[in-house]
Each structure stands twice: as structure tokens, then as C-alpha cells.
Image (cartoon, rainbow, N blue to C red; front, side):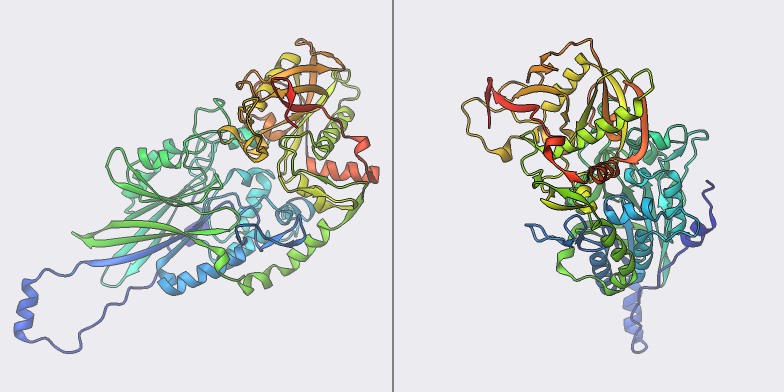
Length: 602
């Protein structure tokens, strides 16, 4: 795509109004004039406010579509762009809209039934289709630029390009390159001028960077079309260019956390969460809006190794729960503007109400999605919940693996792999999902499987399955046989998230958490006999894991025998609809348990 698309040229020269300077009330006396000549002229100053959100994941309203109720949590947080709009309006009024810049650091069009509905049910890509709710809301709020997140690619490039066309702001991705030309496939940067009375304008450049993990997580959509080099490499290329173009301030909007870690192991030579490394290694950056990690960072100061200058980083909480605010102070001296100081903080959206402008704008879309998710697709004989699914084999997770097994078995009929046993992987994504006894709705099932993952079939050997399970078991904290058990402290060893712990159906095994990681899988059997390391299995696995997400061993490089584009959550809804009744007798089994030196923990 050419970078000088008309809509971006149109926006790159946006200018602000002047800073008012008080005029003298009367002509000065000769003595005063002489005195003034001896004193150095007072330096001109300018205050810029940069506001930022990230990981909005389709949250427009303070509404939980999975619970069909206003969003609440124990911390009293609020969510949604309608709240962000109120905050932004307030700060613009305080600082002057002409002195503010509003950015986002990615993961915008995936994450709620609202975004799913307008990607799949009433897709924006259809002829004469709707305008995406996130485009409508962000256009109305007046975003200046948005960095691409990895979840922007979940629905394919066509959906992303349509969303891009509907936005009145650029989607930035300096390290999202055309795989053939190695030129940027999206605008790398955005420049905005802020005018100051009696001085040259302040030129602010925003560089957008996204996550290299897209090459793994959405391989099916981007392989051979786009490539994603590391953030540090591309920042080192573009920041000097922006400075040579006269940028007085350089802000990076990076869909990358600050921890310096990766969840895709050694499959790529790049760091997933490299925002702090960019600040440390690349001279010329003043501030970085951080995304991707879903953590709150009011202010993180990183010293650049080459210049010794401080770079300020901030990450607001996801889902529009927080707004980052950078305050940039500039001074004009020796014919140029220079940054004197940068500070940052986060502002809580629970301090304001929804902006009625946004509420009115998207009330129809919201109502359609509420109606959609409340469709009844079956009945459940008992309540199923994920409350203790992290450390006990829960029937609700067995439902996922059963659906995946059935779909893959049907898909392999008549193929060379039809005779291989099919097993399945699933994770306890949520700690609060519940399918109540009685009527089952789409929202109940969507709450169980919150990601838009699709299904893939891979061939693994028994030995590889054993290694896979050992890696998964690293999720548990090593706990001595005589130690007191606190379920809340048993999991997330080394900060491994719940979605990177897998059940694997079809096998029986114990996880001995008294043992060191790598030696925990005990009594592993298949069909009542010790697992044969040479036996082959077809693993029904989600595309995130199949492509290397979580860095589980063997699966990414295993032979792929089938895949599809239908979401797993849709397959679950179809399965329940076909059955009519959701009865654990049809899918549940106790396949694994936690032990300590052979004694069950529970």
C-alpha cells in the first residue's frame, strides 16, 4: 500500500491553535525599555499533553456481554470508550484541545461479542456492510493515530483493511512489512504540528510499532503476505528519519510490553515485550505508550544507553479501564524547540460517567449484540463452572475438548489419518465462566471460550505428548508434600497465565507438584495401558497453540493435517444446539489430578 494515501496526507498537517501571550497595557518608559534590553528575553515555552489508551479489545460500554449486565469487579473498575471519551473531553477542556494528542497502542477490533458480531455475524466486509463500532466510537472521540495490535489480524487482512478504511485516523505499523517488497504495509508514522504564537510550530512525530508474534499467532492470515521484524530494529531505522524531518518530539506507540520477555520461546529472533528495550537502545525517543501486556504502568523511566537521556513509558490498563496522560514541557532556545521534561500518570475511568454522545451513537449496535448473545441454543442438566478448573479436572473444560475431538474426527474421515486416535487440548481461560442449569445461551458458551481461536489438527507421538504435558505442568508452583494448600497460590508459576496451561483429553495422568518442573507427569496411560512413546495421535489444538503461542514443545513444528477458519466457540454452540441438552455424561471424565509424592492434593 502506498504510504502517501490521500487520507493520511490530509491528516498529517493537522495544526493546533496558538498559545496566548499577554500584551503590554501601555508603552514602557525609556528607563524600562533600556532595562528590558539588558535582560535576556524570556524563553518561550509550550506544554503538550499526550493521551493514550491500549488493548481496548472492543470495549465501548461498561457492559459485560457474557453476564448480560453492567460490568463490575472487586476493585471498582469501569470499562469502555464511552468513559474514555468523557475523560478525554475533560482534559482537552483543561489543556486546550489544540494542545493535546490522542493515541492508542493496539488490539482494538477483537475481544468482545460486539467486535465478533461485526466481524462474523454482520461483517463490515459485506457489500454495503456496517461501519465497525470501534471505528465509529474512535472517530467520534477524535483519535489522532492508532498502532496496530496483534489481535487486529485475528479476522484476516480483509477485515483489517476495511476497518482501516473506516477510520479517520491512521493505523500505524512501522514493522508490519510487505513480505515481498519489505516496505511498510501500513503508515509507519504520523506527524502533527502544534502552533505557538511568536515561535515556530512544535512538530510531534508518532511512530507505531506492533508485535512480531503476529507471524506466529496469525500465521494462517499473514504468512507470505506480511513480515514483522523486531521493534528495536525498526525504531532504530525510523526515529533518526523522524528527527531529520524536523520532529521536535518523538512519541512511540508500541503494542509491546515492557518486561523484555516472550511467550513464543525461540521461534522468532525478536522479543515480544520490548518497549523498554526500545527506550534503552534507540536514541531520540521522548515517550512510549506501551500496550499488549495488560498491566498498569503509571510511569516508568528508562535511561537510554547511548545518550543518557530519560525516556518515559506508560501503559494504561486494558479494556479502557485507564487513560495514560503524558505531560511534555518544551522550551524554545537557539532557534529550536527541545523537550525539557516528560512525566506521565494514569487516570481511572471509574471517576467519570459514560459520554452520552458515544452511548447514543452506538445504542443500536449494542442492542443487536445483546439480542444475539441471549439466543437460547439448548438446556443444561446442571451448572458447570470454571471456578476451580485450574487445579481440578473440570467437566466444563472437557466440553471444549469433546467438541474439538468430534469436529476433527469428522474432518479426517476418508483421509490417511482417519485411523489415528484424536485427542484434544484446552485451557481454563476464565476463572468466572459459568453455564447455568436450565437454558443455555450463546453468551454462556462465549463466556467459556473468550478467544476467537480456530481449530487445527496436528500429529504428535506419545513421547511428544509426554513432553507437552510436562511443559504444561510447569504452570503449578512446586509445593512440598507437608505444606499447607492454598488453591490461589498453586498456579501461575513464573507468571505463566491460565491460558498457557493445557488439559489434554484421552489420557490419564497425575501431576506431582512436589516434584521439580520437568518431572511431574506420573502414571501416564492411554486406553488403560502405559503410553507408548512411538504411538501417533492427532491433537485437536487451537490455532494460537498450533502456531507456537505459549512455546509448548513440538506442536508448532508437528505435521498439520487439517485446519479451519470457524471459531471454536461457534463449534461449541453448534454442538450444544445439535444435542439440545448439555449433560456431563456426554463429555465429562476425570483424566488428571494433582498429587504430592503420589498422594492426591484434593
